[in-house]
Length: 390
Image 1 (cartoon, rainbow, N blue to C red):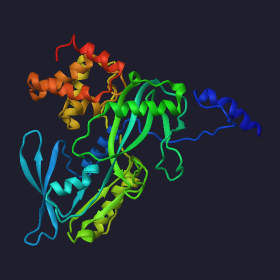
Image 2: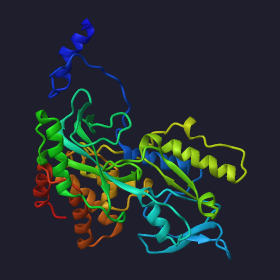
Image 3: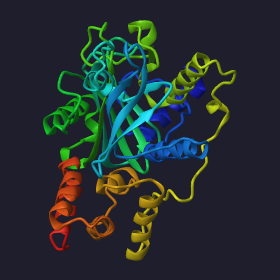
Image 4: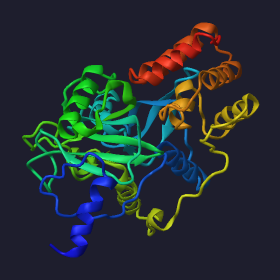
């Protein structure tokens, strides 16, 4: 054994507590990138698009495709609904890009695109945000289930990743056969996730009380793979003119953050070629600015400052729901740092601005509480809210 390798073997257990030392002869450290707050990155992308002339609208539902008359041979726009006011309106467009994520195939059917073919298998994926302190390094451990990875077909890997001072554990994948229109957090699946992880890494001693939040979502599945929960590994851009003979319509079946801008670039370039415009998408040469009107850290804010935080997001980032603020404009609730008083101030500020009655305030609060895992933090928060009038 080389001297450096032996030294690494001695230092690795201290850097990664709980690692199995049996047969351990060394280790390697490599660097990776991490998005500190993915929701803010989404807002930055949207704001930058607006700065370049796009129109972004939150809480607007695309309801129905519009086809050119009389042969319905091409899509020329869509009908939409403002979910806050109930107003309906029509948007005319040279092309429509269906980028509705796991709902892509179902949305086409609901929007009147019966002649448009698109099939998307679904996989339910989950990451757990825990109250466990972050480790110095990310740790990978093998689970007992089969892997959908192209690198290792034997075992699926769990990763314990340091994030915002907490240990985040993921990712588990299950084939999903329910409706894409609604997916609730399943306590039994979270419990199974914890049990499976503890089998792979018993030294961490993870309990349900340690789970602050469960990030979950539907991702495209690979229908060709036999393994349960096998994900699609490459994004797809479907030109419905080629597949269905209906022009002006594209669908994106995308897979992950790290390829999102590339997939968007490829889609935009296709549109420009179709429109005979001799230019290309510039996203890869365009960094994302840090917009000062998108604050996300509420730690230490006074009541007045917190109300200003909410007002800024109502004005600049189209925050209309309580969940918009506490789940998508700040990490504090997800990380178990939000106090009951802050929870109440944010809710009351939104209620005052949008003139919510008491019943609407309670509904908005309960929808957020239902998203939190059954952890010690949730019980503490609920106990604190009992002394605060919502």
